[in-house]
Length: 324
Ligand code: ADE
Ligand code: ZN
Image (cartoon, rainbow, N blue to C red; front, side, top):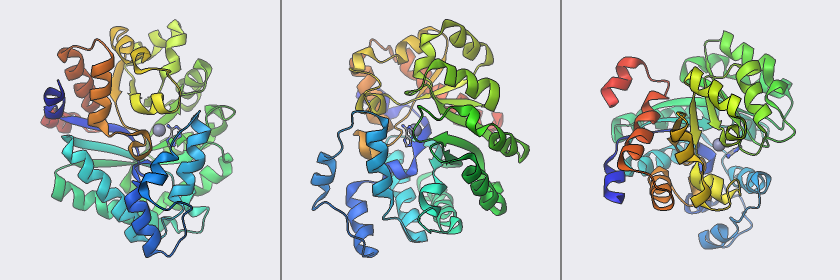
């Protein structure tokens, strides 16, 4: 089965570049930038990656990202991810970055955007991976901060396919960002949002009805509401599901209870993604392998999951058919 999975052409639609920051690269960049990190080795860092919930993880994730300072750092981070994704036969990626994580520390928006963009352009030539970039707002910060970020992004809008919404979900419902999402739509961007990862089905309804998103990140808790499932199926929206993330953040107790097979059976367009692979123990190939081992998925199901990732991407129809 693993051979079959390895050969499937894949797109990855839910990946935080800051979440692909492997401890070895973190140490190398910290040394280059003369920044102290409170660990002695990559093994010690990995040993600290035990999370009871999303917030536990986010605290460590933001601390790790704080060593990123120069354009070259963002370039190296992005290039390392693309190289690793290519090894899993990933042909197209739509990746998130969190500008506020960096600009709030005094790193200029341009430094972040230029480093990532250069790596994506070079990566297309070197690894044959096409890429789209999603600017993600941090939902624990006020909407004004998201507006300021959108303003900073204005000179670079042609580099961004979409805006997203991530970070601490519970207590920060989608409607908090209604106006900035409307402005992003006006600016010609697609809209995605994390919803129903830890938050209730009502947050998914809000993301659909208030934000008017084009794709749902996670969406697991949608299954608690049959009317919501019906709506998502009717609208043909894609869910970017992240099995190992769900396991490590205790969204599911055991992968045997993971809902991805049920999602397919309900007619939902589910996809397999790695979210923050450096923290959750596996890239997209490992996520496929883990669900194939834990659930009664057929080869046809796995083929459907991989095909869904291209169908649910923001590629044009012509680009999609070139990939499938
Ligand atoms: N930021 C990075 N990974 C995230 C996740 N799984 N949920 C919310 N915010 C995130
Ligand atoms: Zn995520």
